[in-house]
Length: 338
Ligand code: PBG
Image (cartoon, rainbow, N blue to C red; front, side, top):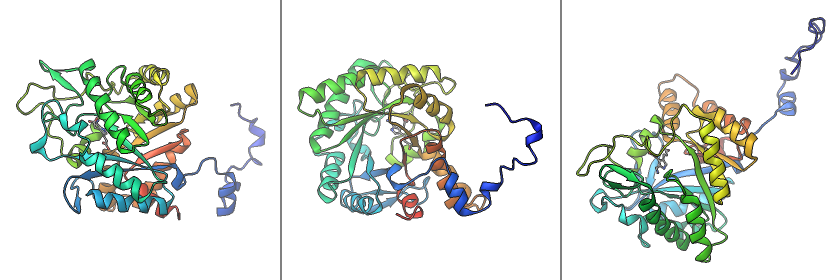
């Protein structure tokens, strides 16, 4: 961009269009609407609603409550809901076998939500971590998360989710090759219409902390089996963006319909590069830690909660996102006056 000559400045007053609400609206470059939101939600195996301590305002929902929430999403104009399971610790094992349980809480929730509000898209997380005793997204062998054995389990889980009626499968595990293999399995099982949103560029981030509390996955590096204390051997190094582009390129080649960058706000530069490079529908995941930071500061009176929520969501649209996966979705939709 070239600046106008200095002499132009007395007449060039950038504040002019900012002086009234009507003119601000007229020149606005990006907007958030309820249609940009995917509501991130945790479901649990018991009854009722259980508050999540590290995420003020968020509750784990029973299958029945999740079905009610789907109706609410429809009323609020929220197009889709992403569900994550909280699993009873006593039923977990080292291989995460219950991930492929056709009567597990995810299958039951998908069926109940699609019954209650068939117009709302349901997205499921394809990953083993809610179901493993050690909290890793894969199968462990001698203290290492092994890629190909993990994918076999992810395919079983993905097919169970598709059979339950899930509309979008979202592999969040960061194993190599899983998008292509899941795509193939969907095609050969008659699920050619089920979409894949890949967690294409997912970073080994500190911002997932409250999520582990929400879904009840224990502390990494502890327990009965030898397991790494972090996810750095499969999730990306926060220092890298070229690598993110290679990850996205591969997932597109393997058949991803939609791509995601995660976390959101600390990675806006990555989002912008992904959008510019691939022109794919690109989503940001405003993760649990981002939610918790805003809520904690607001509860201390340090920031204005409602403005911070909308400003944070607006940043993703400005960076070029098609939409945002967020725990704020229902509140934001209400604030936006759906
Ligand atoms: C794991 C998974 C994580 C999240 C979604 N799927 C956590 C992780 O990778 O450790 C994080 C969501 C959030 O923090 O809101 N498969």
